[in-house]
Amino acid sequence: MTENLDTAPTTSATAHSRTEIVLPGKVEPDGLQVRTTVPPAPTPGRALVRMECTGVAFAEQQMRRGKYYKQPPFPFVPGYDLVGVVDQVGAGVDPTWIGRRVAAITKVGAWSTLVDVAALDLLPVPDDLDAAAVETVIVNGITAWQMLHERARVERGGTVVVLGANGGVGSTLVQLAHHAGIRVIGTAATRHHELVRTLGAEPVDARDPQHYEHIRRLAPGGVDAVFDHVGGPGIRESWSLLRRGGSLVAYGTASTMSQEGNSQLPILRLFARLTSWNSIPNGRRAEFYDLWSGKSRRPERYQQQQAHAFANVLELLRSGALVPQIAGRFPLDRAADALTLAESRTVAGKVILQPR
Image (cartoon, rainbow, N blue to C red; front, side, top):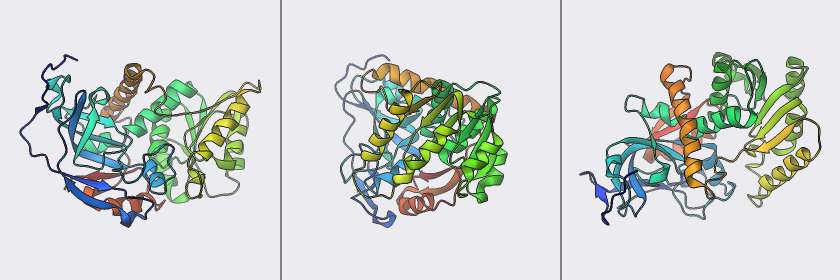
């Protein structure tokens, strides 16, 4: 980008009070707080983005319990990603970003009508795509694309298992794999089986204690990859489903979300288990997918990788090969209701938040 050598931020002509949602501590969803502030001008290398859509991710469900790995100390503004329009830029940022529609992964801070974002993290979004549709495939789409095509590297004709096939990442994974000519077996509650079939997977009842045995009957020769966000004791079963040459990609510890104790221990235990399996030469691979891996060491390369995955996902969204799964829409100041719905385990896809 061309550097803006001015020391003062460049801005549009809009007003700059903002509404934001604060997570004050370990509270129930109705403990979220709404506040109005005036944000400071963006500092060098950063931009202020006027939010059009953000969403409720599984991360926020963990954060309100203090269970998300390396979450910031309370209080803070949650919000993992957003779609919006650049409103101001700080010194050193190309001023032509102003007025452009973008997406960004923030980890926290996106539950706000104006969001401070590093300019390096801005991802261009075409104006003709629906903001809510794009919101469903920022973190979810990048995660699913990278796990399927860059980590597991499953080829056409292969077979994969997606745990939680009705969820934000899961429903995206199912569609990406189906589009790539890969057979998908997806676990979900029975109420979601019709949707899972529509997306392109063979559904298995996630609440059936014998669901791993059911998967083995569907794929007696083993599968090429298992995508497991659950962790916990069941990770052994996921590992056992793999054929020789297969990959287990773990990307969460949902099974431990409600457990008390150190939020980092479940992840560290999972790391240790995956590492021990990789130390045994048996023709299978296990790894933990971390969306943030490499960002601090090589930020520009990291962002190039994110942009590449995101561009591929947007192209599939535009073509209709990827159908956005929107579970509900709420105004930002009803974030408590949105979070309650997301945690109800009754929905498929992503719950969306928008400014009033």
